Length: 167
Length: 187
Image (cartoon, rainbow over all chains, first blue to last red; front, side, top):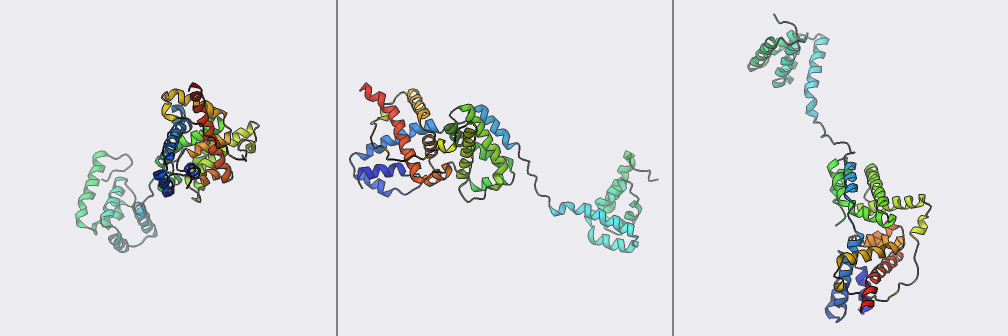
């Protein structure tokens, strides 16, 4: 490789590309190492002049652009809709006038723990289905009696404005 | 390294605010430098830079990954700058005129180790930059981003590869001369 070829290739060399041929010439040439060193120094000066940071006022304006993007909410889990589905199912059962036994069987199947919560809400809101659900609940888990009792007590203690007296 | 992580780009495409903010912060110097090379006036460059990132926000979903993200973004800001110049009555073809002919092979014999006054050196380079044709200045700017290949610079500018190489060589030579002449006169 001649010095002229080396200097042409040096300018075309880009970061990340193989440069064995360039290094081989630098190792043997008496003049090109200092030439390459000078080129590096010039490149550093030119780079500083050409690649510049934006003024602070512009940088502040640019930061606002990312704020235009809508916040990404995490995708809801399918299980998050379960309480609503169960409430709708119970209302549907009541409206269809299914027998207490059928409703109880269905309730036993799907409720367990979550049923206690729904029943408690029905009591608190003094829903027309309260009696129906209470009947259903008594056939469910015995341990959940405490939760219903708690809900009834809270209703009375607070005289919940939306509800009627349970007396 | 100017090229952002592809995962960051994907998150920004999905509407992730933090990712978009990170992307803008990582690219703002490069985009502003391109805009400044084209527009010359800092106020105009600021407007083009802001337009470029607004356009990025609106159209990042259309980026399909056929080219590197930076090539796509730098092409976007270059086109915006050329449009702005065109509205002022300058033809884009005239701005990025194809340059032909041999590149002079003379060596300005500048010795950077003698340039001890950094402020004076920077001022001389900046003064020389203003006198360069827009295409040379823009090609040099992209060249000093360091991680763009010549082919990618040509793609951003929409110019033939050999023209881009000629612009870069001529531009470097002109800048070197701006530093060399006064020193030679002193000697």
